[in-house]
Length: 167
Image (cartoon, rainbow, N blue to C red):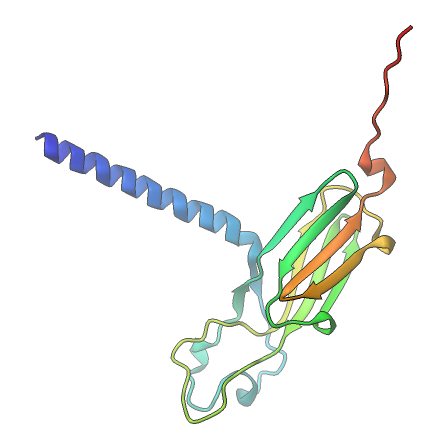
């Protein structure tokens, strides 16, 4: 009976661990899940003549990080295959909006796609900013598949240390 109890406990721990892993994955990916809208819906631009349309996905992950320190907010967004001309940035109120287009890259030849997980088309991602920023002084650069945006905080958002004097 002890072996059965150990097996039951092991299965319960495994089930809990799997459930927790999926929960964490869902929570982390929910912000990164991005809808891509095909720019050209013509058959030649999205899939070859031998590839079923169902294999082309309109959803993909654009993973990003938002980091805040006392002076600025830094956002890093993975944008594989894109260059600066593919991207458009805008600060609207307390939201950073990133728009872009990932262009179709496909193999030419006589083969056919069996798996198609790469997404292409135009997209829009929004990041809620945790503090007011000076949009006019923002800097952005794109290299090695990563977009880095630096947004200086407004002076009132930075806070100010107040020295306490005696007497």
